[in-house]
Image (cartoon, rainbow, N blue to C red; front, side, top):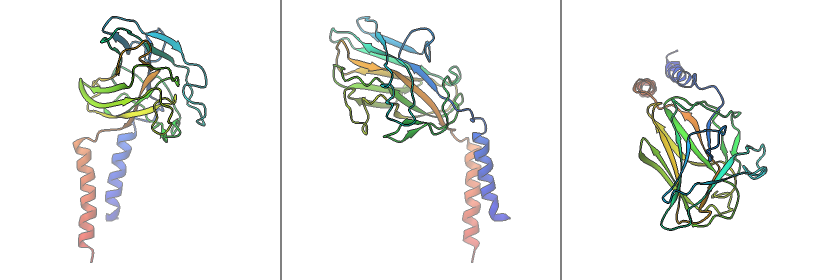
Length: 247
C-alpha cells in the first residue's frame, strides 16, 4: 500500500490541474479589421506613412493545405501590405489575453495543424494562466517582396520569441510558405490578465512586403503552483527513500 502513495499523489495532482480544461478549443485572430471576423478587434495594422492594409479572402485549398488529412480547413481573410516609400515599415499586431478573449474555435483533440511537422491540437481550453502555444499562418502565395518577415512575441511588453522567415519559401519541413499552422513557440502566462502581442514586420518596404492570415493561441498546460511542486517533490522523495531502505 505504501508504494502506491507517490502514484496516487501524482495522479491527484494531474487530475486537479487538468479538470478545468476539457473543452476542445483555441483562440484565432484573423488578419482583418472587418466586422464579424475571428478575433475581431485584436488585429491592427500600422505603417509609418499611415498606409492602410489591403485585404483579400484566401481561396479554398490554400489555407491550410488540403493535402493534410484530415485538413484543418479555414477560409481566413488575409492582409497584405503596404507602404512603398522607404524607410517606412509596415507592422501587423495581434493581441491576446486569456481573461478577455474567450476561445472562439473548436478542434477535436489531436487535430492535425501541420501534418509534415507533426503539429496537433492539445484539446484543452484556454482562459487561465498557463503555457500557451502560439501559431502563425499565411497564404501560400509566392509574391511577397521585401525579404524576410520577422515575428516577435511579447508578454506584457517583454520580448519572448523572435523568428524571421522567407514567406516565399516552399519547403514544408522548415515551413514558411505552406498555408498551414506553424508553431512560433510557447509562452508562459503567470496570470490570466497577462497580455501577449505578436508583431509582424518586413525586412524592407514594398507594395506586398508581407502577408498574414492569422495567429492562434492554444492552451497547453498549467504552470504548477508551489504547493503542487511540493506535492510532486514529496511523492518523488517517498520513492527515493523507499529505494534507499530496500535491502
